[in-house]
Image (cartoon, rainbow, N blue to C red; front, side):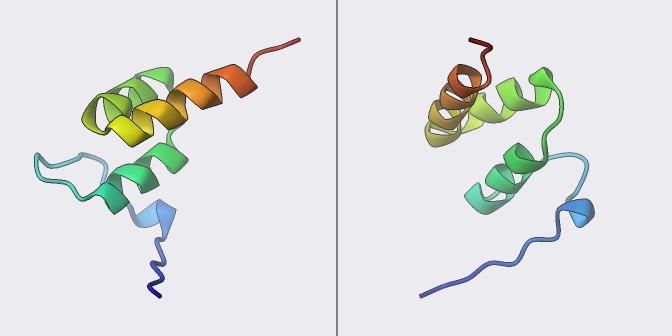
Length: 61
């Protein structure tokens, strides 16, 4: 079993070319603007799927 503790306020502002999946997910969790979500979704297919789900559950009835 493996645990990762990530302090979201300490995340780097800019992503590097070879960012790890853990860093990408942390940035996704911490994202506030649509541009950030789209940029992260383009870098990882699983994050793209999560972003699509987030859009669906965020819709008004």
